[in-house]
Image 1 (tube, one colour):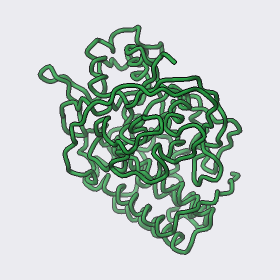
Image 2: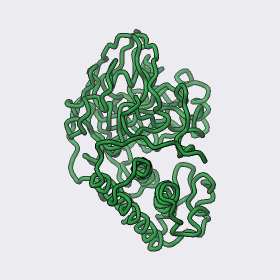
Image 3: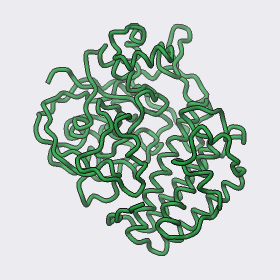
Image 4: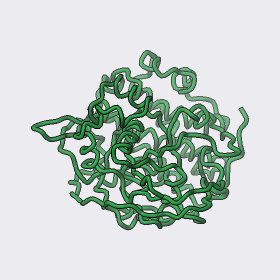
Length: 431
């Protein structure tokens, strides 16, 4: 396999890399420490992995891309590829693998991590730094996936979440108007680590548009549900209606009516809706149906990025380049759940949009496609297999580490997935 040259990664010291590695691993271990051996395997579902397999896969990924590929060291397990290579090991077979025990898996993870830290402490080359970051961000993404797997399976919340109440907050209605023009979409060269699907910045023409200041709230989405939105064919496109009828969906996943009021399941507990918190656990079809009902539309990813970053700007976050505090964004498990859409005023974008980073991933109208001149990075399977079939989400959620986020980062999922921490904001049909 051809390997691209790693970009120069500036401003990240070995000490910071080690700190990030330890933080990610602490979250990984906290995600599974309270689970029984039976829960670590769990039921076979399309949308989850056996957690015991998944934590071993994390260690294998560091081995493949840093120790073996970058450092040319032999594997610590002769069967590592046969067990943990997510490309060659089919998803449905992962429950039938002769997986090592919890103790053996954790020992393998620690051995790999120790070798990674040794490389970083010795002063990694730019190429090694690239692979450290690739593997670290891969672990960060899986930590987030562990949380939505726990939600899917009805397990308790992970222990690393803070124990504090969520403030009630308030709505944040209205649109901001953004003039049309030439917008430079995507990551610019020289900005450090970015994934291949963000490369490279290119001009797109935007018509004037109006985009919501905040994401759609639980109360707003409940109005759609209560108006029979799931049962009226006119709000759904053909694919969405087929999905809805096959799933017999009449309301959002993890919702139920109790005493005439909607409740949602938060991991293993049922709670009342938080009316001013963003809607989440909706898929692309549900978001599109809501938009038709509300006489709105989803933003394109170019419109979303422009509203977050601005014309001619290269800021990392909507507010600038400084890492977020709780006043800027709800990320990195700062809070035990989503906060109200009016929260985090210091994080407003240049246009006046709030929480474009954090709280919930936001669906866009755009299919996941390569940018002009795309070429894959060393981990070819990160993007290439998913073009055309997936939809783009932007912004991050309440669990996403700040170190992974930026205005240009493109997340992507199949349009029927509603287990992820995803919501959406809307645009006016009027320009």
